[in-house]
Length: 173
Image (cartoon, rainbow, N blue to C red):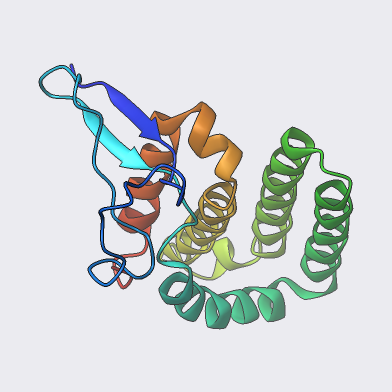
């Protein structure tokens, strides 16, 4: 069984004076701890590195879902985004994460209810609805990956969310 260890980003105080900044001008070099058991996975927590790629994939899809879901889905997402923003502004990290997932689940429910009429048209529309709901789940996973505090406290969960996100959206990295 593998063990996952999260390590902080090395600050400029932690680096030796003899180390040249010309080799690593951004200060992103990372050396894993030396006393780690065999088979341990070490990663440096930082911002999610693939935000631009994921956003390029998600924004057009999000627009299509908002147009398909109508006023109910749009108002649910806007209200959830406002609550999430307020909780983030006040610094309530756990509440913000819960708010992200409650918004995603409510958006999934409104999309499912808006697509009930499709089942009587064709059985193949079940795949369409499934894809819409999978996309909503990937939005929640992407929102979860934005929390650096979650990366520090639960590194295994972050790795799982990242793998699930890339499995749901194969067009990204």
